[in-house]
Amino acid sequence: MPTNLPPEYFEADRKFREAESTSAKISALEELLTTIPKHKGTDKLRAELRRKLSKLKVEKQKKKSTGKHESEYHIEKEGTGRVSIIGSPNVGKSSLLATLTHATPKVSDSPFTTWLPLPGMMLIEDVQVQLIDTPPLNREHMEPEYFDILKSSNLLLLVVDLQATPFKQLEESLEILEEHKIAPIQKTGQYPEEKHFHSVPIIVVVNKDDNERIDEDFEVFDELLESDLPLVPVSAGNNRNLDKLSKLIFEKLDVMRIYSKRPGHDPDMSLPFVLKKGSTIDEFAQKVHKDFYQNLKTARVWGTDVYDGQMVGRDHILHDKDVVELHL
Ligand SMILES: Nc1nc2c(ncn2[C@@H]2O[C@H](COP(=O)(O)OP(=O)(O)OP(=O)(O)O)[C@@H](O)[C@H]2O)c(=O)[nH]1
Ligand SMILES: [Mg+2]
Image 1 (tube, rainbow, N blue to C red):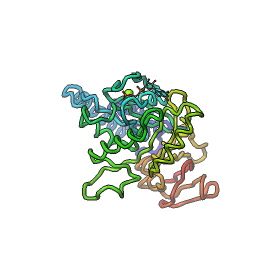
Image 2 (cartoon, protein in one colour):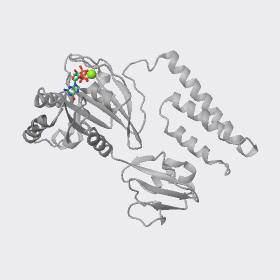
Image 3 (cartoon, rainbow, N blue to C red):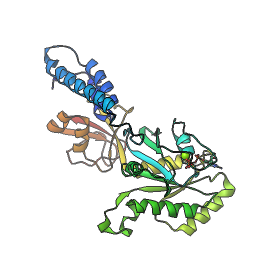
Image 4 (cartoon, rainbow, N blue to C red):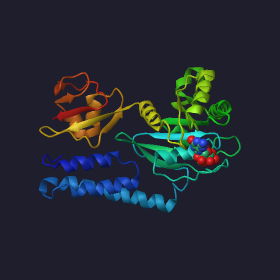
């Protein structure tokens, strides 16, 4: 790789590698090409990127003409994690998506309003999370692809309605999931191992806890339920406890944010690299650029369990909000 590439190149390169959809990859690659100075030393790199670009454009064209992704259940992954909102009819799933994202799902008093999944992006601190509203869980009309969305999710928000029949709704929802071999990760031990359940973390969102008077109903629900699953009371209608829910979502995604710093510069605090909790310098370097990964000599870290700018090795375990400077 040419050594005299400007900082914008690395920023654009990272956007490209984080892009999930073909269209996002194409626009990131086009931007990346504009950041490379035109001279002999960059000829090879520019040619390689142009080849990649035309391959992606052909891919996009093919998808269009074969209609491979026409299914309305096909939703491209975006952001750091995918969180699906599920539950019985009318519990407030779509209302929750509407309050937490810019998406505008249809909300109504009558059950079975939502027929297709709808995504929205939710910003939790500085991390973008994909939230998907789904049709109500029931036994009559469920598309098999519905369960594929759940299985591709990093977390499920199982919504119940505190003002209706929350016990029954929770029980039924978990039963339907079980019938489709999906088990809460928190309860994996309680499901037969040989049946190969797909396990996914679940948060039970107890919706329509609109005011202090109803808080008591939540307390009773919580006490009687004695569940291993984390519960959070919210009101999508009155915007209650949404911060608490966001925090819990972030926690359950099990990720951490790492900010990169170039030697002699301030750290870039605008856009974190998002890594699985417990990742090391090695894994961070891999995410930043393959050159760093291959040629890394040392790294300096500011943050948890280190003194400012401490030199660390490849196997140093990072923590949420650490700042890292990689040295080749
Ligand atoms: N009181 C109260 N009503 C709510 C709250 N959240 C949603 N609702 C109402 O509950 C009804 C159902 O809301 P939706 O968001 O459409 O519910 P849903 O789970 O998406 O329904 P389906 O798509 O039919 O499964 C609507 O009348 C909402 O206005 C809440 O926090 N408090
Ligand atoms: Mg709905």
